[in-house]
Structure formats: structure tokens, C-alpha cells
Image 1 (tube, one colour):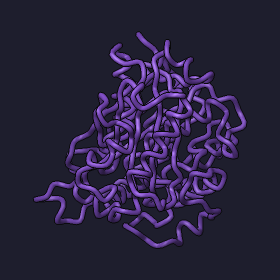
Image 2: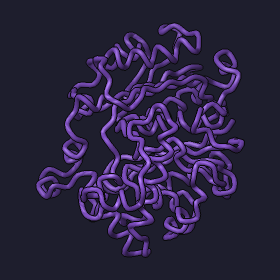
Image 3: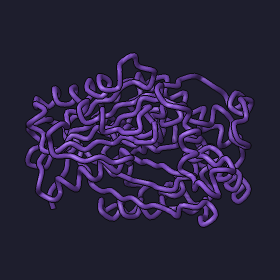
Image 4: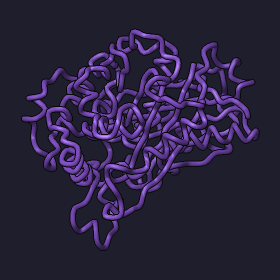
Length: 378
């Protein structure tokens, strides 16, 4: 099988940008090509992740995104999720048809409605949408069930926000960064009981771009390739009532990625994880489903302190999605952050141990309807 490497990458900060959408996209895509010493027409294929449901204020993302990413008159396609785009791009290289693929994911949060307004359109229009179901209300159902079934406390969930927003203080790209206490989190406004405002991800800007290359071509672009060793995705039933909200498809996606990467004991073989946690409690639940701790023990894991930036098993040293939530792009940001840690070039939020193998995770849909997992290795 061919090898696939992440060679060069770039990301924008999460704060509101004054650029128009096309310039915003162009600037980051061009930065990656400049780092690699490539011209636009020298890229084998372009893969774009962007949304048609007004996530950047547009109902036809291709109208702007193709030009801004340099994809005009080049072989390419578009996905609605950035982790899907990365995996599709890797498969194109694995197929032998391409040696290079530029993956760019775009969202301009300052130009769209609130995330809950948009995610409400994910719901079935006849039965679910009139009830006000959106990503946050679905997560609130999931959090309540998680606490009741396993005895996880609100304080344990709040500790995730304390950790991740604190980590973000050291990440120049993060949107939300502040030193908060558990009491600060618990006393913040209730958004959808039991979720508090500081436990919910913000609405952020975000263009992320990655140049993938085959094993033979990678050395032309970098002296520190980060290899994609495994990946997996899985999607659950559409209707919330047809699902076990605490036993979704993340385990399936992770098992596929682990099998491809040859990982049998994830907690021992993975050095660091960048997890997509739009809501604080989900980091605890996702850690369980990724095999980092037994079911129901996510609260004990955060209590142990082991997931802190400078402890044995760092989770979201970047600050995660709670600190920066470019909705469509957030999975690709997890990949870039994991790759930076492997290269030892994450700046002030670089962990203080050697990172050889890292996990990046992405999710979208109500209560984690769809999950993607990517295993990276230096």
C-alpha cells in the first residue's frame, strides 16, 4: 500500500477577519503552496470542505470556494465535513492516481447566523424541527443521560472547560481563551439545561489547509513528514429516538482507524489526542468511546489530571473546539494541531514529551451522529 504524508499546512485564527470570504480562503491556501514551493497548477487534485447551508453566509459554496482555494480548472471535489475531505484526499493518493492533494476547509462564522439556527435545519422538517431540536438541545439530552446513567457530575464536566480554555491561552490561533474556575463555568448562563454557556463552543472563523503527498513525493516538500497511518468513519441513525446517545458510532470509527494503524492498546500506544468536543461533557464521553478509559469513567479521567497539557496523556492541548469552533473546518484543525505536536512545533502549547503517535477526531450531527478518527505518526 502507498504511504500518505501530511507535508505542509496552515490555519487562520478563530477571531473575526476583515477579509472577504474569497481572500480569506486564498490567503491560507496560498501559504501552504508557498511553503511547499508549488504553483497552483502543479497540484494533482484539490479537495474542499465547505457548506451550502449558510455556514459562511452562502447557499452555494462552490461559487466562491473554488476560486479562493485555487481549485479552478483543477481536478477536485467538495465535502461538507473537513475530516471527510482529508480522508477522501488520502484515498485519492492511495489509489495511485495522484501524488499531491491540497485539502482546504472554509467557514466564515462572522457572516452566518448562529450555529443553533443552522443546525436546526439538520432536523426532520415535519416531526423534529418544529420541536426546536438543534445541536445544542440534542447535546443537552445527551449530557443529562450521561450524568444519570454513570453518575458523572456537573463539576467533572465543567473541568473540561477549565482545562481547555486554559490551554487556549497558549495557542495564538484560538478564539476563546481565558482562565476560569469550575464555579465560573457552573455559574455561567444556562443555555439548554444542563448545559452552561462556558461549556458550549463559540462560533468562529476558520480556514485550514493541508498538502498531502504520496510517500515518494513527500520528501520534495518537507523534511518532517507526518504519516497518516489509519482512519475510520461511521454514521449513526438520523433520528435521535432511534439511537443510544451514549453508545454511538465513535467506537466503530475508532476501531476501523486502530485496525488500519495496527493499534491494539490505544491508551498506551497513542501519545496525545485532539478531540472535537463542541460541548464540554463530550470530551469525557468521547475519551471513553475511543478506548482511553472504561465506559462511565470519563469523569474519573478528568479528575486524575492525566489529560492536562503537561501530564501523561494530553487531550486538547490546543484548547480544542471549546476554544475555537470553525464549524465545518474544526476536524481539520484537530489534524493540524496533532501534526504540529508530532513535529514539535506547536509553540507555547507544545507538550513536554515526545509525541510519536497522535489521534485526531472530528464529529458533526446531533449528539455525535457522525464520527471520524485519524491516526498520525511521525
